[in-house]
Image 1 (cartoon, rainbow, N blue to C red):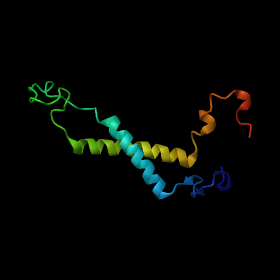
Image 2 (tube, rainbow, N blue to C red):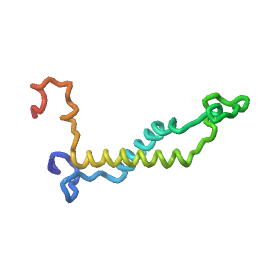
Image 3 (cartoon, rainbow, N blue to C red):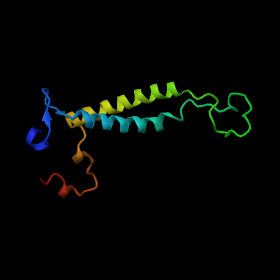
Image 4 (cartoon, rainbow, N blue to C red):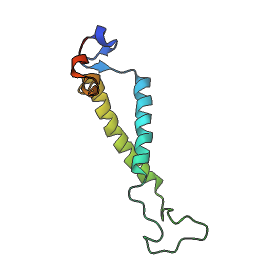
Length: 111
């Protein structure tokens, strides 16, 4: 892949560079996706902790909500996912040709 084909800037080892603001926006997308993935893990309700829930509280409400722990876990997962995304973006491991399995074989790579 060369610079003219991709329209991007090449980094010294042959990959593509991404604009910092684009990288930041994509990282935040990964962060919020990771938040919803991480949020339900490790939650215990009052009943699971052996405590009666307060009147008016939902049965599914967590016994102790630990926002700091969730933020750290979310940041870790988002960073790993973004690193994999950026590496794939830079080096093109999985491209559109790889994902184009719905087209008939005769129409693939016809360019």
